[in-house]
Image (cartoon, rainbow, N blue to C red; front, side):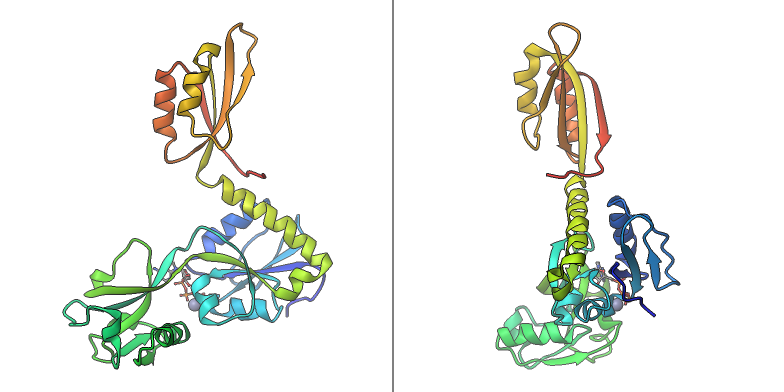
Length: 291
Ligand code: ATP
Ligand code: ZN
């Protein structure tokens, strides 16, 4: 039984590829809750919110029907279910692609050659929409799983399935032909809840926290000391969000510089800064950036 009180309800995947990142994201927003996948319901101790653990396939519809006000789910599922929900923001994890692939030895080389062929998928609605838009008449074979086996079993000539970004389906003896949809985890909201004042305010507060922790992701805060004369040189090296903060130190002619630096370049930046006269360089993680 799901209580229908004034508290916000956010649905996340109970157990699967999105679960861990979704929990980490909510905790990075300062929300304190125990998450037990056996229990449907995890109340948050310090925010008017309950976390619901559901199968990902059910989340878009439950949010559409206001069983939950918010949900975190792959955009692929939102599209497939044709749910009438608002996509509030992309979340930067769970990247994958809905891809049409054919067996390595297939003579099919282009999407147009799929005409009159059989395509197996667990995404019939998205695939049919794609085929309609391309004016292709292919037979869509709806399976509930193990789609990659369909060509070997001669049930289909091609498959339309999810693959992680960056990986290839070559391991299954398949050759990717076309990406139908690029997807990542998204925050979705019930359209009516977004308009209601009491819960709308809670959603706005949560959305600010989420965007703050998304902004902070992959960034580090860097502090260093340097002679004032080196500042113009150092400024050119620091790829900062805005210009770096420069604070005078008690020692005459010395300053401290503070700046935000992307995680993937900070080692390189740090070495160059050192060479250019910076010392006592400290790099710390950032929890959130509220702009
Ligand atoms: P559930 O039990 O909740 O129905 P599931 O088995 O349908 O789970 P998962 O495999 O956990 O779902 O995938 C959840 C989501 O993760 C997908 O809908 C998709 O958005 C994303 N994802 C990222 N990479 C992949 C991948 N390689 N294969 C499948 N999904 C992926
Ligand atoms: Zn699922």
